[in-house]
Amino acid sequence: QVHLEESGGGSVQAGGSLRLSCTISGNSDRWYSVAWFRQAPKNEREGVAVIASDQSTTYADSVKGRFTISKDNAKDILYLQMNSLKPEDTAVYYCAAGRYVADHLANYEYHYWGQGTQVTVSS
Image (cartoon, rainbow, N blue to C red; front, side, top):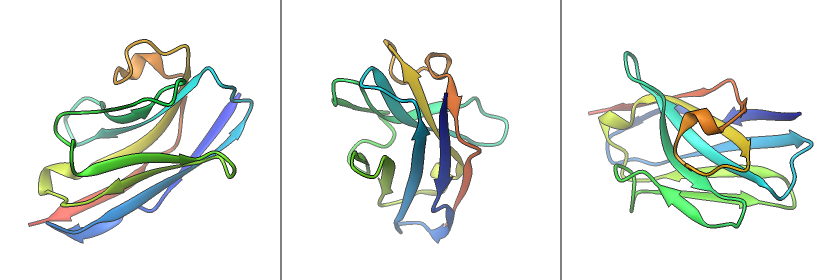
């Protein structure tokens, strides 16, 4: 069982920055991938960024060059640094964990989810 809890959401103007955090607790092992997803109203939940079990990273095309995913392994905290934010980045952001993930940005691969944190970007 893995427990995830996000923090750091809020409201920002376009061009601004936010950093999301996700505290990871429970029985995660080296086979887990950890990821950030987001869901805007009327949209499906989409993968944003992933740190795979081999420590490689994957980003959605829409956030490449603007967002950076990282993890503090000593503290078991996952981060998402979001720069140059756009109104279309407005969504509820979720962190997720999954074991033996193959398709890194597919939400069905992840079994554990946080409760989500709202990010609102105004123009």
